Length: 219
Image (cartoon, rainbow, N blue to C red):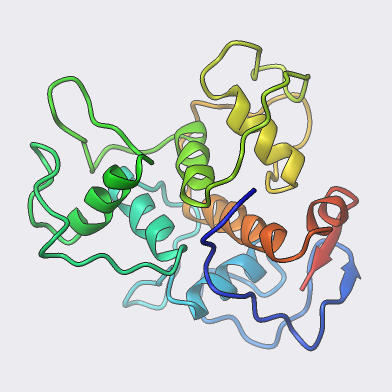
């Protein structure tokens, strides 16, 4: 079961299935994101919903790596929650009253994240792909796959992150094809946008994961 996803996806016209990897939109809101880019639909939707935002120079910087604080802002806002900044603060030794405190402290209260043994959170540290995947699935209350089966060479039985990768792959929210997932690679902005968008779509449309697995683009 899953719960608390961001509103209801505004589907273009009706829920139509379009074959192919890209859809032609008229205008991109960002100078560095083309309407034909693979991740455009995800970036466009999440920007319109104010889960993501661009930069003052009109760019989105899709290849930029996310840090731990930035990711939690995206995931908390992806649930439709705006935490109270006077309530959610000072939850780690290095998380006081900065802009990201309300997101980090809310996520800590919900059990999405834990700190380090020294009491810190390290909000400026980059987040890798499996850390991001864990936070994403926990933020949407997704039940995890518990039975191991092969999906990638570098996702093996017994690793802490394996259930998260298995679950995400079964739901059709991963872009990675081939033998390797690269768990330790840093997660970039376009990648988490795609994962979150696909997860929201999956939760909204029960057959979405099956359609995405077949290479379709649901809008």
